[in-house]
Image 1 (cartoon, rainbow, N blue to C red):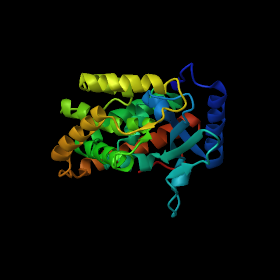
Image 2 (image 1 turned 60 degrees about the vertical axis):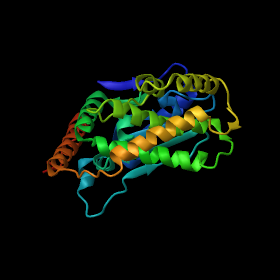
Image 3 (image 1 turned 120 degrees about the vertical axis):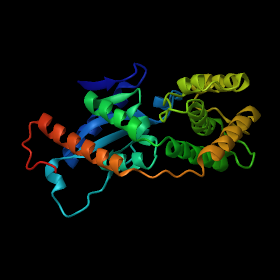
Image 4 (image 1 turned 45 degrees about the vertical axis):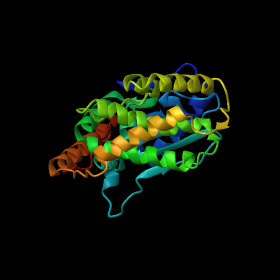
Length: 284
């Protein structure tokens, strides 16, 4: 089954440009595109009227292109076109980063906005990600991301663009959600769902709801210092996360590396079969 999930409020002209761009990527780079999604604020659930379109995709090289002594680039980056930002990762890179605890690929797999994809690929990759993702490493990812946003944009107490608050809030809320669920390693990507399920203080919930309502209808939220309610929440969650996750450094098991290799080979072979191509060899 093929995947396609485009909200009705998205600009049809922009979506058509993205579809054409994905066609060019597949043709010019001779790759399969088993998943292409929207990332950023449009997928997180706090878009502004002028938010960029952040298309991200996973690509897989054909079996014949694996027979080479040269290492291929593991990213495809396209130049900005107005408000369209698009790039993708080789499945190899996505798997390597997943095993290191990078949560980005998990978020791509959970995106509610899908331009194209194969249902079996997304479902099997997400199932593998839930098995392979290290909870501690994912939490460190969100901790470092959130602290960097806090330090860079709100470290000196001066006025900053209010929309940047969300980029510090999201990792803090993810850390709280994960702390409340000790057996989980994948937090919701959709920010309103994340905020609701992490049960934040009522004062913070009201502040965030008001910010989101304003952001959805205005091109510019303006600048102001970080609200004290938000600052307390960020600092408390980051401090708790440092105590729980900063010192741990779990290693990837040999068994999980083998499982990743098996998953990778299986994807290449299935995409080749479904394309009608004759495999030049079987990936050993």
